[in-house]
Amino acid sequence: MNEATATRVWRDLRTLVLERNERRREVADALGMSFFRVKALRRIAADPVTPGDLAADLMTDRPYVTLVVDDLARRGLVERTPHPRDRRRKLLSVTPAGASAAEEADRILGTPPPGLVALDPEELAALDRVVTKLLGPAPG
Image 1: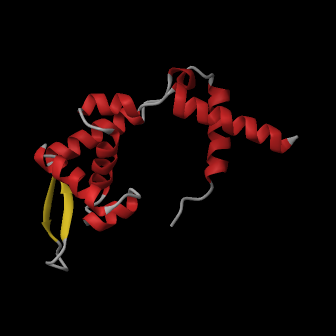
Image 2 (image 1 turned 90 degrees about the vertical axis):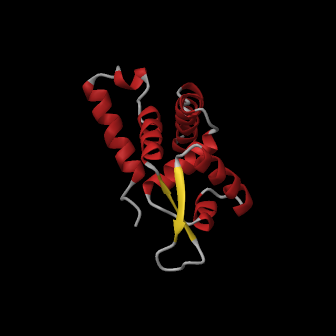
């Protein structure tokens, strides 16, 4: 019984987040770029990164990352600078415009759906406890 209930709850959570409250299209439309580019921008904004590490983080190949970074650079959102410890490598970082775009993406993605906001305080507190328990301790 517990496994069947867990399967149903997991399916419903995926539906809630990935189908009924999908924000990727909203972010892509707001920033005028594909969500993959938004994802790359947000990763670079979090901490400067090499193209190779960005490719690994995004689980894609380096040639595609080069195309994405070229586009972000043309838009004035990221810049390449020499790596401080290895002049043969480049470091990707955001420009002020890139930081602003990443913040806008985070704002949109972080906006809770109306149904969540509408929960009464006890329900929201109970959901908060359950989600916190499911997430467990922060990695690293």
